[in-house]
Image 1 (cartoon, helix red, strand yellow):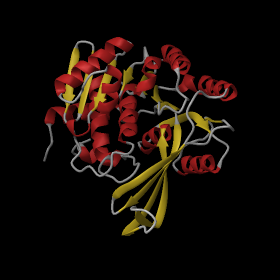
Image 2 (cartoon, rainbow, N blue to C red):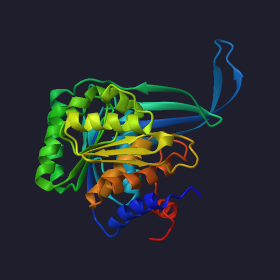
Image 3 (spheres, helix red, strand yellow):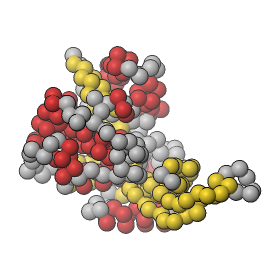
Length: 333
């Protein structure tokens, strides 16, 4: 039902490369906490024409770079997470959530003058009513930047792959990317970037980038809706930034994988889409893990496509398990 043999074969090849491998991935970038407030709506406020949400429960999840790390850990991968938090209650919640999910907080750097980013979503009757963000953007203070670089230098020698997760909060800049690429040159680690369009020049020389359609259009300065447009936009980014691959994640249109001399369009694997929150985090984590295991770019993208297709069928920031991937691939491994 919807199974595409050639596509499944690519994903299966990448999945089999992971069998028995003990890999460690470094995830560097913007950390945040996702807070979900669930409730019900049955009336409009007398104060303003807005719904009144009667809160029933609250859930916190790891977001941003922390969600990438969470997805990798859920697959049994060793992960080092490096990023910046404030001196606040949200940072404590984030550290507790990391620990509860088998992740270490040793790579977290404190910046006292910055709040730990938190995105709060109000959800009623399975629909998001509103989202509000608490964060501060802009360059890091010098002390936090120096401490962040020290953490990278301490941990990077053991990384098989590196994910740069840029949400535009100020952690990722050209200097950090260059530092990570120098380490990758020494260790052979694969470096993937989840980009923020305004920061595009900082990613020059990275191995791969995984923008969504909107991000691709913003960085390339051209549309990327149909296959031909996505290919042209991806190729423009590939050449402009000197990348080895651009993987355009296109939602219900699947993925377009652009490499020098090769373009591959992968159809979507999602059957039911309930929530796209964090799907890009899942995709880049699985893609980088597969590349670290020796998969080629298209095999790695195909496996990432499978994983993202599973996650969008869940509500809220979510992860995918080995069993779910195995089932999606037909359970023949």
